[in-house]
Length: 390
Image (cartoon, rainbow, N blue to C red; front, side):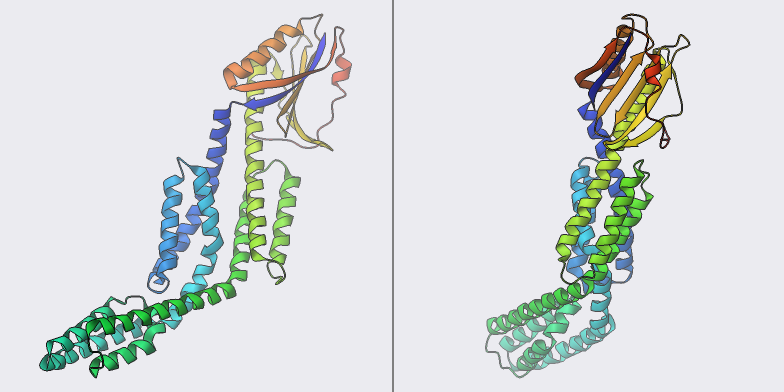
């Protein structure tokens, strides 16, 4: 007797989730290490002085990735995507800010202001305590301005305030603090506009860096489906070309980039699930006394691809299993006498779920014949590739 069955196979949900999570951890860890290296380079360049908000955001996001990497890899992956969208603009933004707001100039100015403060406080004290309080508060606020970018954009307004403080223009402390706060608010707005303009100018280059980084990751992936890998690399090349097109939204390119990254993950996870199924089937057939042909083949056709496993016994009994890329197991037990194959089939099905947590469902009996039909087994497709690591 020969019997040819088809099932949908599914690795136990928990185990499949573990494969998925481990894959995300591994991928995200690679990006995290790269982002950490960039963050440390930014620290070494002193960017925390010149773009403190951006550095603080990056530091917090990296902490969140690290925090979620083990217990919530999906969240870690999503945060990694967010970091990817802005980190590549930070190097040029930091250098640009550093060149404009030189730390040496700031230190020199602070020293001059401190000397000026002491002199003016002394003079004001000689006049009256109210004026002394205004002078003291002004220089206290100036010392609290540690962001050189804010000081740069507020420089003209602050110089006028200092002159008014010196000349006793302000009649009370609140009047001076209100003017001071308005000057800072205006400077913060100008700084925000400047950063936006700089980021826009750098964004095209940053987007290309993102695409190149993702492409390098895809090239390093050991995917069995080389054709699919080639298609994804071609899509990345197309995105690289589109990044220079002013008529194409960079936000749309970002979405496409994330879509490709997700597709890479799904493909790698799907292949990992199938590898687990293939190894489990090989072990099961071996445990039932079959000798498994080590020439395990990856065969492609118009409907996709499948991994072919062939096993036999000295008596002539033979099993051919095809594991597709969409979660189906197609197997054929043949060269059996009468109905004797049913016992081996039942053990095969039961043990796959009991021992390896592979559940078979949606059974379809494609054909059953009580006679020997070993010749039909030789009509299976020939190999068009070889799958390793099984």
